[in-house]
Amino acid sequence: MLAFGVTLVFPAQAADERVNDSLNRAIQYLLSQQDPVTGGIHNKMRNETAMTSLAILAFGACGHQPSDSTPEGRGMRRALDYVLAGDNQEPDGYYGRKDGSRMYGHGITTLMLAEMLGMGAETKQDTALRDKCHKAIDLILRAQKVPKNDNNRGGWRYSPDAGDSDMSVTVWQTMALRAARNAGFNVPKEAVDEAVRYIKRSYEPGRDAKRGGPASGGFGYQGRGRELSTTAEGLLALLVCGDYDSEEVKGTSERLLRDGIRPGERWFFYTTYYYAQSMYQRGGKFATEGERVVSDVLLPLQSREGWWEGLGGEERGGGKVYATAMAVMSLAVKNHFLPIYQR
Image (cartoon, rainbow, N blue to C red; front, side):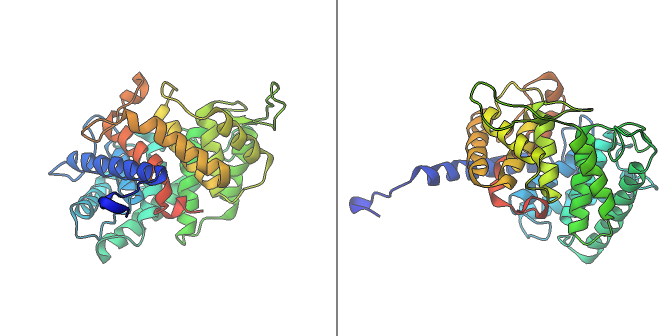
């Protein structure tokens, strides 16, 4: 405190306060979208179970728990009950059929269940979390064993019985498996290793010829490639699976450090989420730059009411809950409350 009651506010502190204010407003928006009857958090458009799961993860990323005696805690508790409702999960464990979210939604919901284990408001909810998560993980493991050719082996696609694979669906299942393994589930190491091998087969190295810099490769959607969104996805998956020093990790880290992200990218919020999480996991200069870039691009796009909305047709169709939840998890990376995102 200086003379005359003037308080010094340093740039880093001011930036952190802006992010915290942004996160608080976003959580209040998500809470306002909770269905008063069912407890689901979505925009009544599609993929209601998956969207509710993303919202729960966003609450968790800000430090809220379903056992909290706060409006946020009560909202999480009701949202979890919605996801755990019997008819949302098929008898075989599948979460992607009723709400039309397919294996994308199944991976998202399974990841959420694994992250919430032990956080239930009561024993009954914790028991349901464990039972539903167990069935969902078993389905992921069965789907990985569907016969596939060498290029697709180890990955997942839109349906549990698909004979091909893609990076986006694969990374959600990989994250779910890793989270479940961290939570004590019996997830075979070989299943995670097979997924990592699939991801690495999608890697394409590159080099910054103009500056003569280090290799700056990327990952493709199906097969080798260097798309920005799949590059960020693949990097995060490798890091949470314990791969920190491979050529693929080094190359994609340099690519993301060099190129960053900007509004207007296809699947902007999706890419920003993976970019933020992977750069944080990479640590050092990558984490520092990632945090700066994410706040610089996201904060100006937030509405006064706290929501974000997709910038393009594809993401706009996901609704404000989708974009807001992804933005929250991107900005809240500094909190590292969720187990899967801890270094």
